[in-house]
Length: 351
Image (cartoon, rainbow, N blue to C red; front, top):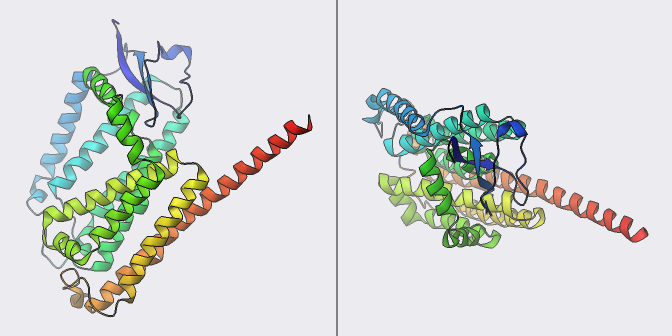
């Protein structure tokens, strides 16, 4: 249709898209279950064209990348002072992710007033998730994590228990697609509508499967042989962080977006239980399990075994508290919903 482009409108699963007349919504092509967005047509009289938009994003990315090129030469600093770690394999996805979301969010804000309040909260959650990713993977915390097991554990828990749920709450898919040119956006939308893609996602995000996959990733990478390889090999280290983050996103998506509150609380409880057991095993182990990771602990006033014990306590108590707190919130919502449903049933039965 001349003068119109296919875009994405965000909405809650199972609900229709509603918009004010001035937005120019033409028609909904097809709803994509599980992803909570729709391919729609909006008036394209105002805004940046797709090609220009991608050029702007690319230019902004190049400027930031070149400005940090001096730091990219120091992927693994070896000084005595805590520094920021600029690994291009980490910085590039982070910058791309952040820039695409920023441009998509800006276009959504300029083109429609509908849902601005909800989008504001989603944007706040995204910023929180993105900043905690930067804090865990780029800030001096990462530098400290290469030298102390306890700080490495803090880094992992931020990825899995803070960044992942914030990114899920942000619902970024629709906003990210807004930043793409029309032909790419339509191609991605068609890809996500494929039955096989939807089937795979439905299987992965099912509560039992998501909890199991995330649990396997946590326990497997904390096996001493795999953990030692991640400490001594940069490629394995990147894969470790990536698997923690991706499986955590799938897990929290299942908990916050797909499962009912009661079932979600149960899966959170199971995750709290098995991660606490793993943390307790590390904290109470009578001998050293992770020699390469704890090899520099003496320089920080700790014995290797004390560093391992502290890391285990961090996984056992603070991380377990996050899962327990989320489970309690969802349990409360589940009980409240059940009470409201029962009251409505009693009211209907009394008629």
